[in-house]
Length: 94
Image 1 (tube, one colour):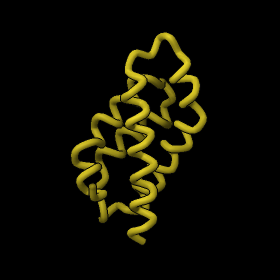
Image 2 (cartoon, helix red, strand yellow):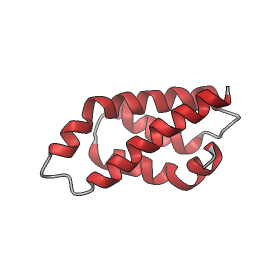
Image 3 (cartoon, rainbow, N blue to C red):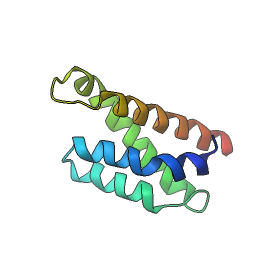
Image 4 (cartoon, rainbow, N blue to C red):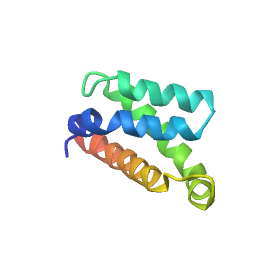
């Protein structure tokens, strides 16, 4: 999928998945902005947001998977993988 397609189809679900888990105001802000910004117009800001969210997942992913209270673990796995894919695609796009 292209960057534009991933953002059009998946950004809202990705944002909601993360927002349902965390109360970290910075992460909540990044998830809202992920939906607001457009690619390629806002490429640099989108890449920064994606980097922040990938970093957040790197720090929290194991806790999410191990938690008995999280019922949508597969959604988190999908979100984390999509963010990593977007990061690679944007870097490749130059």
